[in-house]
Amino acid sequence: MKRKVSNRISQVLYLAFLLTCFMANSARSQEAGTAGPSSIPETEIASLQAELVEQSKETSSTSKRRACKSIVRHGEGLIDDFPNAPNRFRILAIMLDSQKRLLRLENTERNRDDIFETCSKLAEAPDEYAEFRLEADLLLSERDLSLKGADLKERTEALKALIQRYRDTPGEAKSLMIAALIAPKLEAFDLERELIGTMTERFPGDPVVIGWRRHNLGVTEFDVLFTGTYTRADGVSISFPIDVMGHTYLIYFWSKETPGIEERLAEVKALQALCPGQLEVFSFNLDDLPDAGENILRALDLD
Image 1: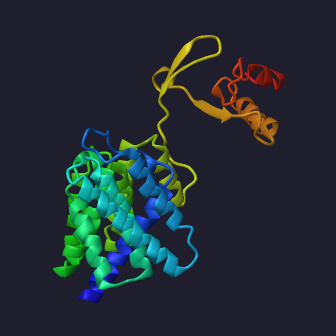
Image 2 (image 1 turned 90 degrees about the vertical axis):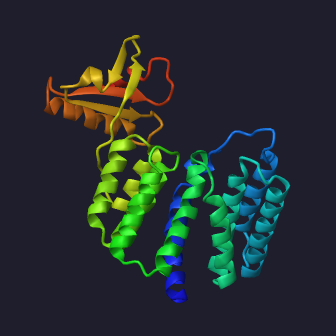
Image 3 (image 1 turned 30 degrees about the vertical axis):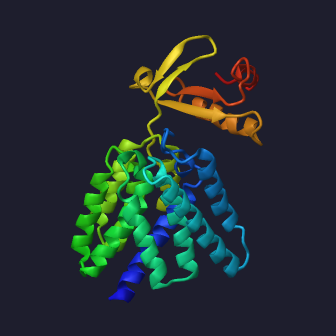
């Protein structure tokens, strides 16, 4: 039974690790709380995070293990000094990352127990820290399900309940992405499709979700709703999609620094020629040019 639990936990850890790497330069790097009088100083949190970065640069297994243990001790010391700090959950999240790395280096029962202890503390985080709490909830759920010998149906229902818990929280998008990776392993293919549909509906313009879908679903094109009000070079404001509903249009983002941009813009001109009077093109130049790129477009005989 312990071996089964260990294998299941390792799978969940691996999925969570993949998503953490994927989001490393996005939501996970954002601050999740506002410092208060009893909060752990931001300098201490930054120092602990820097230790985690440095640990990844170590070359030997011994040095990596030593660095992981040092991070955990440092984090425990901070929490001992600030036991009621509202931002202590950020420290726990860093500790959990370090403990996961240590488990990959030393897959022992003691290290697994340490992870569950940190998860139990992190699971108490309020919704403000939902994104940090998510992995802890997943690991605790998987441990409990494995110990009771849950079947695929029970696991699927538990996954649905967890997703619902993260609805309308800062961790909702991440919960959907992780769940969409887990669902096929539970043979819950209908749930997988539902999760992808929910991502499309609730996070249509989220760059992290868009990148995840492209990376994991193996697609190059999918529906993304473009919204917002923008001012043309002549001062006229256009609201998307309201002002262009019922029209066939193309939104083209471009930079004069892009290699071969004239050839690419020529392709746009060819589309206009193919559909005369039927295709409206909106140019979004990214170079902050005073004329928004109009002179370049005019020189290429583009409207």
